[in-house]
Length: 63
Image (cartoon, rainbow, N blue to C red; front, top):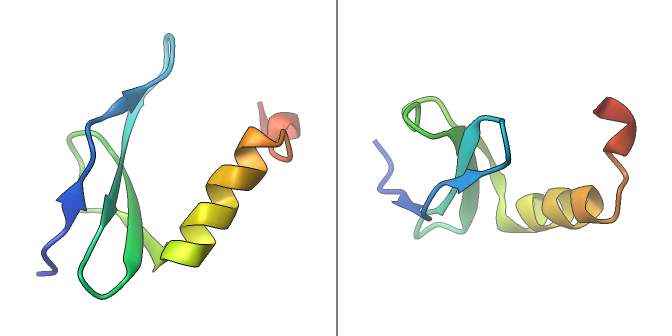
């Protein structure tokens, strides 16, 4: 198993808590807090782009 360094959970108001993590190979991870054994994995650049796009409102239509 990959050694992932997890950040503290991010919890939105009234929603699930998510955790972001990284490993020594430059991969990024997103998981529901408490389910870190099943993360979504991609490169740090892809994770950075995802977060930047969400902050820019590009996923607002999904809400």
